[in-house]
Length: 170
Image 1 (spheres, rainbow, N blue to C red):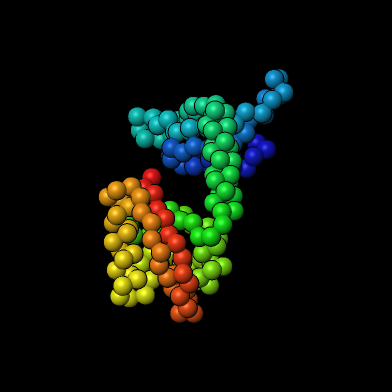
Image 2 (cartoon, rainbow, N blue to C red; image 1 turned 90 degrees about the vertical axis):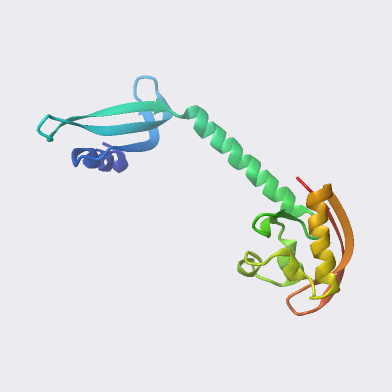
């Protein structure tokens, strides 16, 4: 077989495993290629030895096209988010973390991606009034659907940058 993954899948079946293969099937007669998912399994005799196998083939063209469309939409969304001026983020209330943020967070705060991935919104505000008002405003956006505030963004160097924050619940 031209695709070694198919041969490896068949070897697993001959050892008694049920498995699958996803890839392209090239039809010689129709002269076209179709994405398929093939489910393979062994057929056992009454004594428990493998007598043969079975294969069920499914055309997954629609799924593959949908995955490509979804990937393209995600790339578009990422490009839009990263092109926005200032700092932009989508915040997860349950886990108190960023789900998405634009690249300006790194540029403005001087934190790395690894550092930003472990930080919460409150980490960007000085203890005391700045952090307290931010905490109130985070609650407000989830209660009322929106908020607005002027506050100082605390960056890695310890410098505070005045910012106007707005939020909308999605």
